[in-house]
Length: 309
Image (cartoon, rainbow, N blue to C red):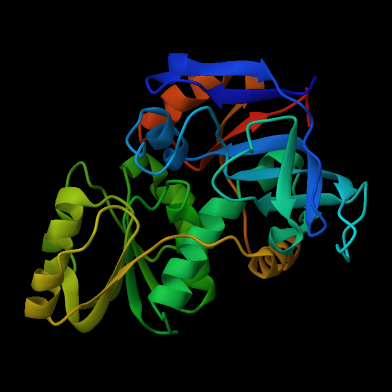
């Protein structure tokens, strides 16, 4: 039987179990993907440790994004056929497995320039960054954007997208990641270990907040009146926003095959790059979670499924 990683009880990385599960069958509007690699995201361990138990029930197969090949397609699916190399944010579940199901509309051809682990690192993180900047942030050329956690899985895509959109990009990151981020298009970098960003910058048009907490609270000081705070971690303070004259938006990422096709074109044109911060076989999923939970990985962590991909 095909293998999958299942959470059967809430807890630490040790509760992740490699189990045998029947191969799923696609509905008319779905595709079955033979998974070659899966992305590891903070959402995964927040589900695993029970922080989201009000939303998710057990047993549960983790995994939001995958890269692999189409194994089978439903009768109503057009444009995707068995053997096609694809990548997708399949939803909030099912990616840590040898086979995964996805709606055809959220699946896109894999960027030709990326291998499967690289492609698996893209969907959720890139979609989050793009939607924060363009749909919630309405970023325009010439504006100033501050990206917190700029070297992380979402942050390094936000830096690239903002640069490509013609914005002036400021990022917070440890000094060891500054050269990496400059190469991606960052114009200014602030080492959060040695400087307080609110003492270094002012009049930012858009803050991309991937951290919440005190980082979000300190961000009000740097946003110009009429500017925007888009947050993917913790609900922004609406009262504080009104007092500061700032618009606030809460980000919840949406799977989108059309946007993934656009990203693939950017990768193949050399306008985007991906960074793998760690790659583990499915059997070492607990180690992948431990690394992800440190919060200090550059780029994305992936699981390689079924041997080298």
